[in-house]
Structures are given as structure tokens and as C-alpha cells.
Image 1 (tube, rainbow, N blue to C red):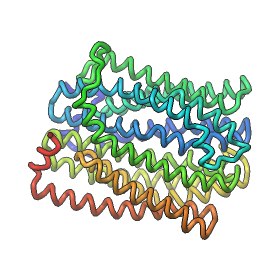
Image 2 (image 1 turned 30 degrees about the vertical axis):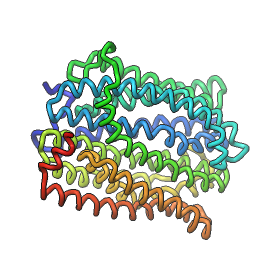
Image 3 (image 1 turned 90 degrees about the vertical axis):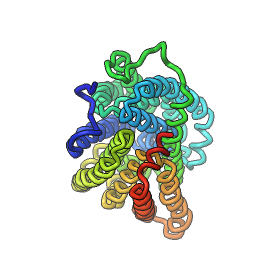
Image 4 (image 1 turned 180 degrees about the horizontal axis):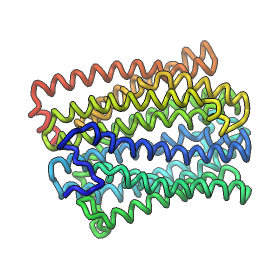
Length: 457
């Protein structure tokens, strides 16, 4: 029986339901980033540019370590959504009880690997020697929290697979407010530096993961969690990995390319590092809208494919395009309009504002291209074709960015030329994904039954 907070994706009009799914999810990402930005703002205002640059210099590396398993959590979303569309309640049960131990074991594993590799990786990224001790201190504490970070993402994926994006949002709001309070207490009250904001982040993630865990224990629908039933089902894990691992690898390789860009940013010194960090913490608000509609597309396509409603899969994809475009363009224009005051929240330096605006203009004026990539990739993952968009994105985004840094940027060295790598890579990748999606749809029109049997296998 469908609960009030869950969305029936296989019946009724889709537009309102997509908004009901995507907007809380976008708000979750925006709030999460606001709380992360609070780390940077508190440390930038109270401890200065070096500490702010130290926190920002870890972003690409943390993404590299986290995104692989977060991608598998997306696989969890698709698998449970498909079981829901099929009415396979045993499959839902087994997937839920597999996801939780996988999250904790994966988090512990990467925490250990990250601690061992932290200093060599930061040195590889050419972090300024003056900033390196601060960067390393922040990173080591953050890595201790990977098990609860992974747990939250897998738990949230379980709720979202049923169309419930509001419960993860409410838990995040509560833990995020605590995060901001701890930031101020640790840094302003106790006189800590980067270790204060790292400890606050770990504590808030522990709270949000614990809240969702308790709610799953008391859930009344098919995703109810029973501690005695926790196990790892080879069948369910295999499906999660088959769908989620390409997305995780795609994100991980993305992070490698972003580490290459971050290394180039680091070569300009602390002012540019701080500016890039501040701009990233602002521009990513637009990305969370893009990503929310991409995840909505994955989930709606997955459930309707499970129910055999391929016509609704296509309608959902088109609506995600249109709604995503409207909200993304609106958010991008707002950020560009108020860019300088927003950057000043993080650091009052004129140099930080100048370089930060360069980054914002390059990325936000072309963010709609990134929207095409996310929605098309999301649709193809929902159809079970996760490897195809991952391969195209790795070649189109990562290949272009790494090549650009070592050729064009090296020949014409400026911060603006470095930032131009983002729109260039998006143009190439969105064009390639558009062609791949059109070919996939043509194949579906010829033989939809064969496709449904392939994905059920």
C-alpha cells in the first residue's frame, strides 16, 4: 500500500509528481552544501585565507574517495524502484537489507585506504607547502566519518526509491543546523582551526545517518528494516553494482579530472585557491537542481520500466528536461546577479571576489549543457544502460579536461583559460550523449519486449 509520503510513479500525471520528487531532493543538496559552505565561511572569516584554502583544497580528493560508493547507492535506488514497479516485495526486502551493511563495510574500507594515502595524494595535487599541514589535518578527521556518510547516502537512496525525498531532507535540516552551531562553537568558542569544522561535519553526518536508520526501523512499508535480517544478497548486490558501479566510476574519474584542475588552481596561490573554493560553494547550488532532476529521471524511468510502461519512461524524461531547464536557468541567473555579495560571505578580499566571479561566469552561463548530461545519463541508468553514459562521460568530460589542462592551458596560462575547460567538456559530452540516447530510443521502438526481458534478467 502506498504511504502518504511515497509517490506512485506508474499512474497519473507525471509533471507534478516529478516536481514533488525533485524539489525536496534539490533542496536537500542545497542545504547540505549550505552547511558545507558554513565550514568554509566560518573558517575563512575567523581564521583567514590559508585555512579557507586548506579546506577547499580537499574537495576534489574527498569526492574521489566518496563518489564510487555513492554511485552504488544510486544503484540501490534503481534496483528498489524497479522491484517496486514489478511488485517484487522479496526483492525490495533483500535490497534494503543488503544496502546497509554494504554502506558500512565500504565506508570502513575507504576510510582506512584514505588515511594511508592522504598525505601522498595531497602532495601529488601540489598543495602549497604552507597550507599542506592544515589540509592534511582536515582531511584525516573527515575520513573518519566516511562510514556514516556512506550510510546516510544509502539510507536516503532507499527512501527515494519509493518517491520519498522529504524524509532525508528533514533529517538533513536538523543535522545541518547542529553542524553550523558546532562550527561556531569549535572555531569561535574553543579556538580550533580546520579540525573544528571537520569534527562538526563528522558529527552532523552521524546524526543524519542515525535518524534515517531509526526511521527505517520504524517504517511501515516494504522498506522496513529488521536488524536480524541484515545480510548481503549476492543477487541484489550484483544488480546494485551493475547499475551503480559505472555511475560511481564515472564520478570517481570525474574527480580525477577535477583533481587535475585543482592542481592547476593550486599553482596560482592561496588567493585563487580561496576564490575557486568560494565560487564552487556557490555555483554548486545550480548543480544540485540539475542532479535532482537527473535522479528523478532515473527513479521514474526505473519504476515505469519495471511496470512495463515504456511510454511513461519517455514522457518522464521529456518532463525532467523541461522542468530542469527552467529551474537551472533561474538559479544560475540569480547567482550571477548576486555573485560578488555571495563571494564576500566567504572572504572579503578583492582578489578573491575577482577570481571567484571569473569562475562563476564561465560555469553558470553554460550550466544548461551540464543539465543535458545529467538528465540523459539519468534516463539511461533507469533503463539499465549505466555503462554507456558512464563511458561517454569519462571520455567526453574527463578526457577533454585532462587534455585541456596539459595542452591549451599550458600554452595560454591564465585562470580564465583554465575555467574554459568546463563548458568545452560539456559541449562535447552532451552532444555524444544525445546521439547515444537517440540510438537507444530507436532500438526500443523496434523491439521494446526484448529490452524489457534483458533488464529483467
